[in-house]
Image (cartoon, rainbow, N blue to C red; front, side, top):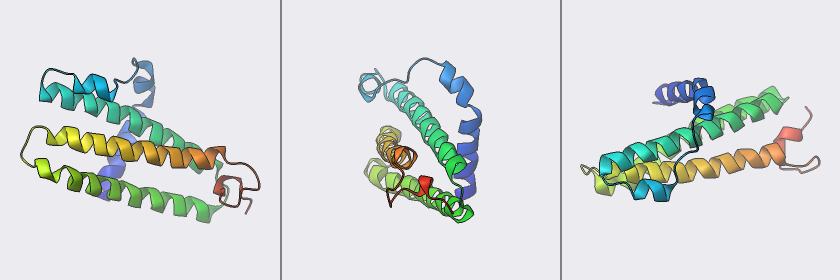
Length: 141
């Protein structure tokens, strides 16, 4: 599961230039106004693709900024654990719609919310100030 998730993340990372060249991502409201469930699911998948690209970009920036090997290992382990948590939690949240065509949309909204939150957490580390004791990115080993 972890290997599959990391492989998917690497594929998305490789697609970043193509994603960046595309038009803006649709909004949740735009996806919700699609005429059919399969169109909604495809629309939400596009949102997730863009959010994952943002997450991977910030993760890579933070890894590059970290000087301490132990901090890099901890971030990598935390990210792997977070990906497992995100996917399992959202599978649970969407379980009530098991067998329904709306389940992928419910799952996508959950994944999107958690991914935005995680990206903000990584951004906080990238934007923290020298002297902030919770700022690993500015710690000198």
